[in-house]
Amino acid sequence: MSHETSISEVAKRYAKATYELASTDGIASQVSDDLTSLKDIIINNKNLLNLISSPTFTSQEQSAVFDVIFKKQKTSKIVQNLINVLIRNRRVYTLISVVNAFELILKENSGEILAEVTAVSELTKDQLNQIRDNLKKMTGKEVQLETNIEPNILGGIKVKIGSQMIDASVSTKLNNLKILMKGAN
Image (cartoon, rainbow, N blue to C red; front, side, top):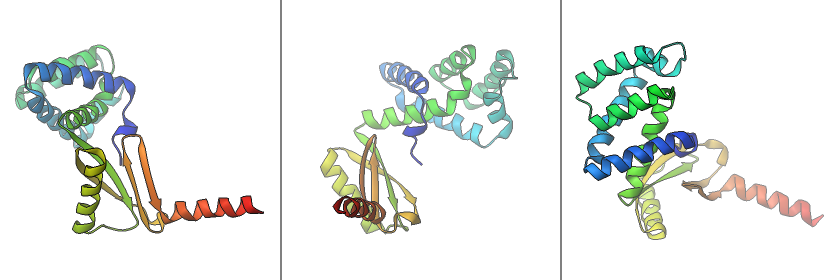
């Protein structure tokens, strides 16, 4: 699924501020690694997921748990500060969205974009390379593909880059034809 659609404006603001600090210090890649590692730990631990998503935990409890994680993971100061600000502002529940937003910002600033490709079945390596090459020509940027399978599109593909959608699916073409035929009556 696309990460961008699930990212709130609040998460984007925190991610942007974190990216700017990390870039200024020249450690954006390290911060990205720390955030990704933290995200993986949280996603794979139901207790941690509950800790950040449940309002029943106090800020002190959340801080204590994250302090232990920071020491074990040797987390960068920027990431520690981000988490502490999220906890203090009672927005630690947005952490995974902040990490997703940070990853997108990092890719955009490295000249890479994410394209979400939806097809009726698994695409071959050659097909994916052809799509990537065409999108690279179109955007002038390196393209990372995220693929989804959606049988109800019947055939063709849908490509989403940011807010732009290229819909070359058979289901959409049939729908458009149906609308045209209704208008002709």
